[in-house]
Image (cartoon, rainbow, N blue to C red; front, side, top):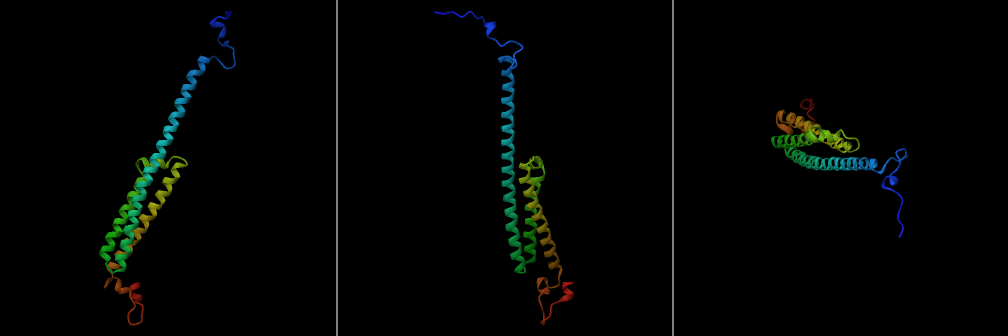
Length: 166
């Protein structure tokens, strides 16, 4: 049986060792692990928020699209009052979608590089919906104010009513 002649003090790295002691690397590695874990949790949280916001925006945008289609059909059928109701409902849904992308958590996620681009696109689509529904409301309101409604724009006696169009 052989015995070692080294003492515990001899097995430790000397203080001038380039890697430092084993003890000094332990806390640094723990801090690094916690930092990496925190960054992973943060990235996953941002991704989850992006997905949840996106689903809400998609739901509102789809509902706005359906209301716009209903308004268009009502306008084509000559029911201007119903068309206005549908266009206003569409505008409300598109505004809800836009609000979700620009305020609260949506605004914070939108500021994050790369992931924020998805929110920016959703905000742009929502803004386009707000603009389109606003234009439809203006058109339907103008048609409603015409004497005879939409029929006032129909050709009469082989002529287009240019005065009414003006």
